[in-house]
Length: 211
Image 1: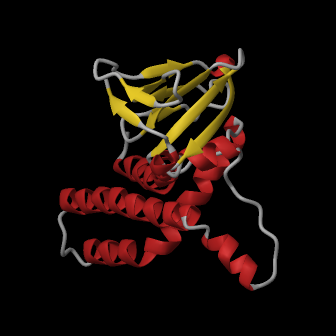
Image 2: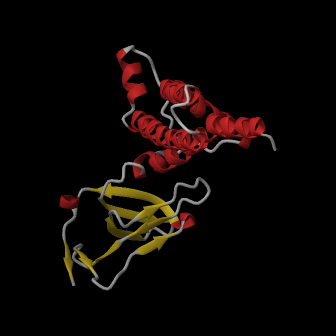
């Protein structure tokens, strides 16, 4: 393969890859809508264009330094790769913050416009907040499971598998008081068993004294 061909591959990768990096990071920051392969690619392409437009000045500076022979070829490509990775991460966190802080909705409200939340479900919206709360799960057989949903708990973000893991389980006695079993290491509830979930502040719980 000729040097010119390698350059084309490199430049094409630098243009396309940021979108995939950004979308991957956004998936860790916000629940993303499930898209078809073609729409997901277009989404990545859009993020790549945004990233390139935002950081074009930095690329121009580096390219000009290379054209003026201030940079050897190997150092030029190292800087380009570093710039691509760094700019992708920064862009992803900026976009993620815009989504989490509902910046578009705030602007729309100021302009008296109705906006649609990018988060698809109430499940994704609530659990993406990562709040530690007292949780009460009512199962389909009408039995209840109470516990503490904290940083070591987990709820699935996969649309077809809304299961949940509660890190600390409480038992309710005949007097309506909740007790924590120190030996309990958590409780898993599959999606097909859940009827509905209540979220409570800790002070609303009658008691959860350790046994």
